Length: 489
Image (cartoon, rainbow, N blue to C red; front, side):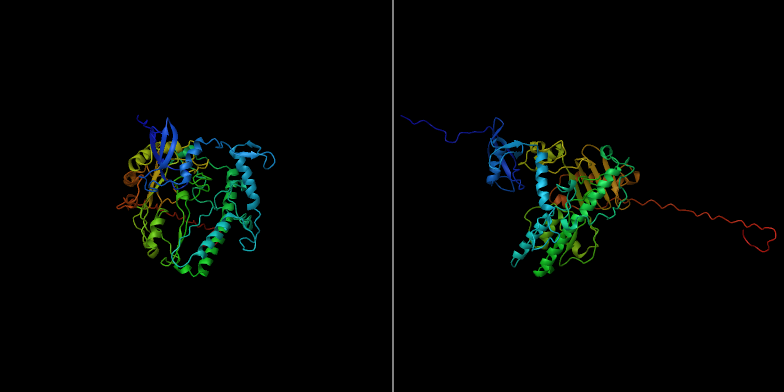
């Protein structure tokens, strides 16, 4: 008599797909096992360079987001006594308004003496500064790295979606004048691509009034950031670390305040959005000097590891700007790629399928949204079109290509406010063709390909200045009767 053969490991799937985990920001590689289109099991992808097959409990439980019977489809609002278990479903907008109201009662009642060790301060900027100071003081001998990401002056959930200043600065900028730069509420946008002209409408007086209020709230919120920077520097000085510490003060993006008719947005490639100042303090940085060289946020990792004499162990897209700290007058030949893909993109999917075999093309399509949201959760303002584009910034020029059609070329030396698109100008034809070729070679680049400089940018001779001839009017002298000599009338 023979014993029956029992399969102790039956195959429970008929398809395996590789993608990345969205349960947290790590984006670990995962393998998803499906049966008849239903997820049965999730495990780490050994071929992924980030996690190399390791997956945490949170990632493995991602299946519950889809199939758990306890999954909530809408927020619940308690309607009975606490503990009674009586709830009603509400929309997300109502839940956000309710939570915002609760938080605003805490945020807006900080004593004006904040930040202070003698009182409780709940303002976000003050809280994370307090934590940063605690971390700095806890560091023993040796190198340390602290990164502080302030929410201010981002728009807040309260205050009519304007920035939320600390209570001590509310109203302090109400008389600050609003400076209208050239290009504010741009009158003539006929040179812009059709898709820009279609969405950029002239600001109304009511919109301008709201814009001034938003600007002043941002200034008031930044005064809280200014306090925090001062506290951190004083802490470093007290701990005898200031002279041996590099401080980088920068932002992840700019912000439109009426330029090109945009009152509230950041996703486009124009200067108000992509050009932000960066201040560096450190042992080799030249005090009071300004560098006009092109650098990018992707250069920070390479610069910090260079200053720390360490190896990043990954191919970085940026290059170290440590030499500029010693020689701020050096301009270099840097070219920076600017890319924005808020919507699914066929060319981007094809590139990822070719260069990242552990990412499927279907992933970006599933993450796209027709409402202006990206897979990362970023959303474009209603006043700005959420567009897919690639651009290159080098020398005096910026060249932009939109995925849905339209191109722009600006000579930022002659036209720093980007009022005159030169893409159809015969004088700039060589520049246009050169930058078009450079952008094609660098699109979706990574590593050393992104770090390449440019050489021999075509030169455009400036237009000769018009000569203004002064016309001198000759005065006629009349001799009147009874007058002698040459008296003029």
